[in-house]
Image (cartoon, rainbow, N blue to C red; front, side):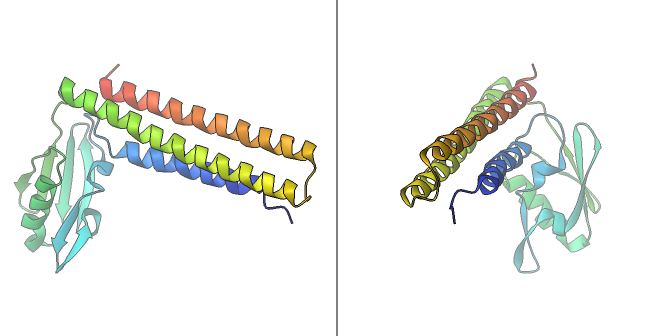
Amino acid sequence: MAAYNKADLERRMKGAVESLKSDFSGLRTGRASTSLLDPVTVDVYGANMPLNQVATVSVPEPRMITVQVWDKSNVTPVDKAIRSAGLGLNPVVDGQMLRLPIPDLTEERRKELAKLVGQYSEKARIAVRNVRRDGNDQIKQDEKKNEISEDEKKRFENEVQKLTDKTIADIDALAVHKEKEILGK
């Protein structure tokens, strides 16, 4: 039984791209997005809970996020959690509703975010290359065990390389798009 499994490699490479998309969604681009508040956890009921489990997060306007807290007693902890999350957002409390105006990004902050895009995409590229290495190792093991011929080994290695090239091209395209979005170009 050959250890090389192209479908598994594809799945793992897609996982790296999905992880990158998730990382990118958390980057603030000057536009309101509910995913901005995904990393926020609130200390309520004696436990740290994700914000979306104690309130409804919505985007009524392009530059405004609203957080409708379900329990009145949680308004202050939610406010505190958002302020201390390091997102640069200052909630305005209005009863059980918190309004979060999204400020314009400074040029300096845009450049920092663009660097972060580069770091995230490099992390994804490394993950893809690691998957490629694993795939090539599996192919070599299969050849050593005489489960595949040398021609098959070459063909499989080419498949893995093409898959890697395609996935890295996807990552690069995502990074370029996100950088343009952040830098406003």
